Image 1 (tube, rainbow, N blue to C red):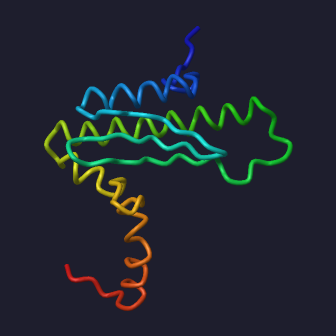
Image 2 (image 1 turned 60 degrees about the vertical axis):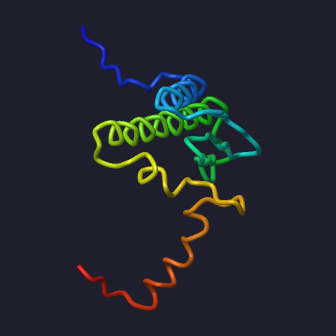
Length: 136
């Protein structure tokens, strides 16, 4: 009898957080921290002279009937997926497909405390709404 095992399916949220911290640290990030408040957790870290913030929010609209085990399962899945994302980004950096700065640009913290994504998202939406033709 064989048992199908998907890596991460049973890993705890804490295991995935530790994996993310380890991955970032091994790739030169410093001061890697997880900061949680309410249904949001920020992973903040520094690399070179830049600071970065990855934000993980809780799943929207948990049904009232979702029990604690359902919540933990959803949290494990989200943390595992974030660990996979960070791992893929760092693999692309290692393969010289992109630079660290390119791959993590959206998460770069600016002096105003917002990320590049938070600072530019609305302007990009407005630009596309004003002119949807793209030069190729």
